[in-house]
Image (cartoon, rainbow, N blue to C red; front, top):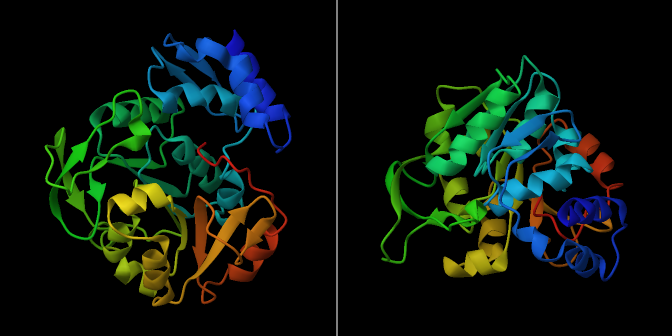
Length: 292
């Protein structure tokens, strides 16, 4: 099928101008395929879904031919026995990747409040018999309680909390990482992808950031932040107050220079793995498209 050829082509082609346009031309209208999908990811994990109407699910096929875009960050940071928090886990691409790295004695805590998306995440975890994954139905923010969510049909990755007074599609429980971690293992790495609500998550994690100094992998997309009336500088200032440095994941490797990449890594020099992780990731060229 054309979409399978396109994903193989995308995996094989180097980063270059016109790469995305070429693969989209090869993919053509068959990108609308919505049938069953199964395969084996590049780390050996498997997936099988009845239908792939959601873009996040259909993107799994490309991961049969290459690792996820941010996999080098997880591989550089996580060791067997570690604990990882995946905030905004979606269908679990990085949950599965982290689970393979931390092993049987480690833990991955995946937070996904959207029922349908979490059902796919749960199915993938069960298919791979991952006993080291804990799945939470709560959204994560700056306080506890409930919050309304806007759901985007066929685009689960765009689901986000409602704060503009519009009618939410669903109401979900809300927790903070401070509360959650108080009775559980603290994380070595926290991945945060919450469509512009990253600062809320950080504000609710001040205790563990101050005491545990976990590595933070954050999405920083201007359009999502602008919807909340904030900029990347607001997040940078918050983290700087806690001793964190922001590093870009660029095509030239890990860098503290220039504008922000779509995903950034925040580390504190107080962390015992700081020097090793920075040295390892400086050699990695990250793709422009860091969606999956």
